[in-house]
Length: 453
Image 1 (cartoon, helix red, strand yellow):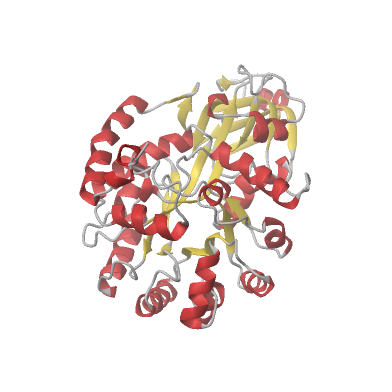
Image 2 (cartoon, rainbow, N blue to C red):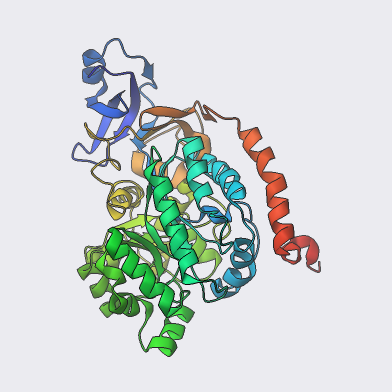
């Protein structure tokens, strides 16, 4: 196939068998990758294709944000002094009772733009709400499709704190799956918000539906110590063991966090093929703990990196999450080799894709895969001098260094700016709906204006 564009860089980090190619290039055609190799060879094979980039900068696969909550898009910057359980009840729980499908669409567009501008091309979202009957989660698919970001969306059902009929939750799962079936780049997983946050009837019904429909699952497991304690009081099991008992792990599962896991838990996760999503920034903000990344990987568990939600991280900056993932492991283990820059980049690309079961299509720059890639320019301070491209990206780069982003061969970011929408329009459109949501939810008491100075 003739290339439609050739993307060139001083370093091409393929994250595949070709490794790192100095002065390399990637040829895109028909939404896929048609050639990867030394720039001279690729340019000679595709002489008519326009060229983006030169012999400086870095080209990578698009990043895979393995865990977030687009339901939080309009309520960042609240509750930073709360534990997870407090924050869940007072921030996202209250907002989730009032969010609408239009709020979801607008908030998703805003945060999808933030992700694109930090190099994300695929996002695994769990949309959490209890405004039943509005089918608000479908708005996340609407927003992703509007922007053009690849994604997987689930509805993070929970009914312990805000009870509703089980049938209402199952109806939204079905509606979201049907909506995803008609989307171009967005897939579906069943969401189990948390095992502890579901009543036994809802959890059992969810597992039964996932089995019957052949759905994969997105959930949280072992995020905080209180979760382990409460689960043992409720079932005489922790949440990993409870998930096993009820059959949740009989289907493909990606689990956010996996911090408070013991030896038995790790063995269960590995045996059942569960993947994990590490969310270092949110785990630090909420003081949840440190994910044992090395132990999980050592057991053969795929571990991706996630930003987590816009209200638990307060940002969807994937470059920040990648850097924090490496730094957190180093300082926690007191070992500079605990998680290296190349390992962190693999977690953010091919390992994240493997955790989602998408590594046959994305996550590395290989001929035949979809053309999801990022070009980092070399004009700024962050990449002005590149001695080791992996270290330079992980520890020095910022969204200001992102020049171009393609998703499925479509240029969504050009020369550091959104190519198809205006960021100012996304920002302006989000403000009135954010104010409306906070007002409806009665969350004004969480703003700095409501606190004593």
